[in-house]
Image (cartoon, rainbow, N blue to C red; front, side):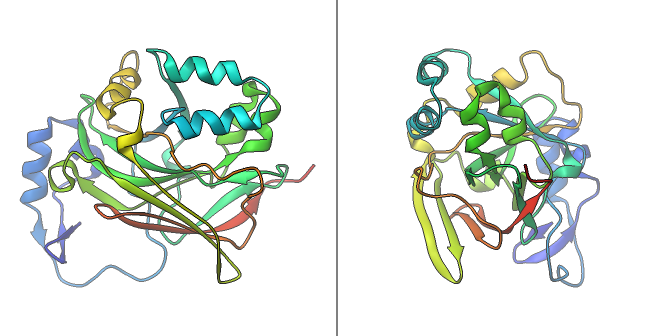
Amino acid sequence: MCQDGGWAELGGTLADLLAGPLDEARAMVEAAVPGAGGFPPGACLPPVDRQEIWAAGVTYRRSRDGRREESGHGALYDHVYDSDRPEIFFKASPWRVVGDQDTVGIRADSGWDVPEAEIGLVLNAAGEVFGYTLGNDMSSRSIEGENPLYLPQAKIYDRSCALGPAIVPSWAAGPGPFDIGLRVLRDGREAYAATTTTAAMARSFTDLAGWLFRALSFPAGAVLLTGTGVVPDAAFTARPADTIEIHCPQLGTLTNRVVAVGAGR
């Protein structure tokens, strides 16, 4: 872990930190032993070990509007935006997640694909927010737009989820709100850029975490992506070789290059 500008060695794994109460995890972090050397160059491992990644949808008005634009089922998204129960879906197994400077994927059988810049809640086994990380919930708008029942194929595939560059503990990051910026570079030029803030969310972090844990247990903790307030319009689609940057002042910058995955039609 990085502490006060240097590297320190934790006395356990992330799963160990998230298995117990928040105060015990904080004590373990603060007791980390400073170590020699820096972090090796190149792509970073994603900040997960045994944690499943889940995601919430339609938590911003812009997300609701974007899902309506791509689909002929607008009333469906109006309903979930206004309902007490949120949309929560499985996003990735830990071994399918990529980290900062690694490549994210767009499906080769999809013609309309976008990054989704999100705040990720790193939750302990009790559902408490241990920390925050940045997430990219890569999505095929053409597949989900064809039929909402295709959402798992639009959302869950190899390299569809990026997390990083690190986890910032909740006591260090503060409660928010968090400003989030999304930028896509193409051939060295800016192809898309927009910003949002978690202050625009229709639901709170604690509400979303409560629903995830309502009938599921996570002994090693979990990561919950909290939805996106940045949705490019229909004229934009991500392409192979694009570079995606997601930035938050409290959490750093997550950078990934785009590749095509899977077989085409």
